[in-house]
Image (tube, rainbow, N blue to C red; front, top):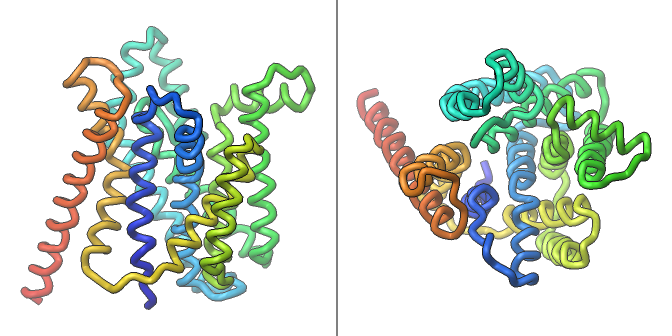
Length: 330
């Protein structure tokens, strides 16, 4: 099977961007140019992972993606995402409990709050990154249902884009003081579910990744889209425009640049995964030990990124060692 080694490098870079989105290394930067450029990456990092996941899934499927084999692959992936979501939710449960113990609310209120977060947002105190898994699960379920109903991939892509715009409308309405009925509806929806706009991006970008597995995007096209997206960000265009263009552009660049095969890319890929899911624990321990309260900035970013990378490297090397040992014993 064709390997996408540059994609693994991009995954590591985007995992670093996710760490940056939570630790704010540029919080004291007043340079508008740097901040705008930084915002481009922050806005599309997780969407890049949706694209990558959809793309790798799509390479295992065959159009029109509704055979029993393909549906089984999609449902199996959905189950895997759900299992990972539950496991990582348990891993981060102590942080949620610690927060609830100090929020001054009743036990029942905190339980309801946790259930709401578990079902609707995939996010609790210092476990914000888990929304990706929940959004992936819901997106895969929707894709499975629509494919089972013989809906083709392009209409699913359009449905996903409509839902993506719906999510963007929630974010826009939340930031405004408009009294229009539709804006009040979006604010009420956010108040009840706590869902924000980013959560609704999963279906669109995951489906787009599947679509790209059978529909080529060239390197020149990717570069042009990236540049247009960056310009759109600097011009303060609607967020959804530059998120789509930049995420798709970065992804296209990643899958089109060919790099020689090396075992190191598998290790980098595993480090990226570990970093994405464990970095919020690392950051929490870091700031509790160093200051006793949340701290942001370059120091927090570097400490979190470096420690997460080291843990990911240890994990990858131990996993490889165990696999080699089992192979030699077989």
